[in-house]
Image 1: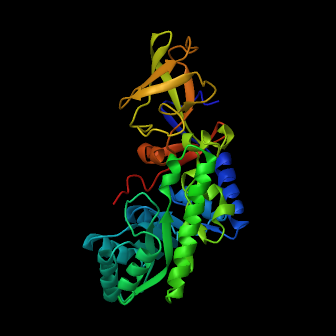
Image 2: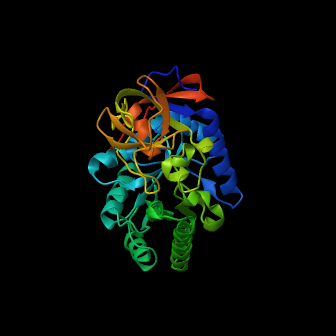
Length: 362
């Protein structure tokens, strides 16, 4: 199907992408939840505009650099889901607010004070969500009373408008079963809804309750009561979705074509793909460094920068020069490594997709 592409080649099946977007948007909407996709997965303004066209409500960015690229492409409604700290970030945020409507988050009084100072300097009100720690311990405050304490600590700062909460339930990615994932999703719902109720009881506006990982976002019936989900790699899906039962092979839009360039013996070979194209990330639900379509007996056991070490359970039915297609473990790394990808429809080349926010990590 992909024999004509030079390898290693990163392929995006556009028909699958469109189906994935529509499915998530429609399922969320059926439960009263909007979708604000995390664009760090693809870092492409083209794909972000496609998500908006198909029903998404604004976008989520991980860093200012992504948001700046997206705003220059004409996207207006942007949430930066990352604590902005430092005068350099404040200066850039001030410029960004001149061309887009921006919401960001606060997880500390220090960050809130810096945003407040920017608001006073620019004469603009800055919309913020409180950063609620969903269990990873990577920033923000715990739900409940700690969230209320932060809100009370910063409520008198001029120029800030607290509009709601942001929650990331990242522990869900490490759960081995659907039942355990559902428990994490239920906790996400309860933490958001209960914390919002507590803050409302103390006079705070809680109009925006933002959650939804790429797992919990596919369980909107559990999340009903929050206002938006920020799922990201659902647009492509990957091994984590495939081997946890949240996607089938037909739902995996991001694929990597690679060539066997060496055959050491009947069970071992080398593919022309490594960490610079693929990713060294592992998958909790499947061994190795990706899944080779149509050949479950093959496993990528190790990676160098430009080499993938291939091992077969039995005699390998590949010869040097043969091509295989694999699904990566973690979709959110691939586009940023590639810089541009092949947009195809059922294997037929359509156009090159530029990753115009590539490496915008600051």
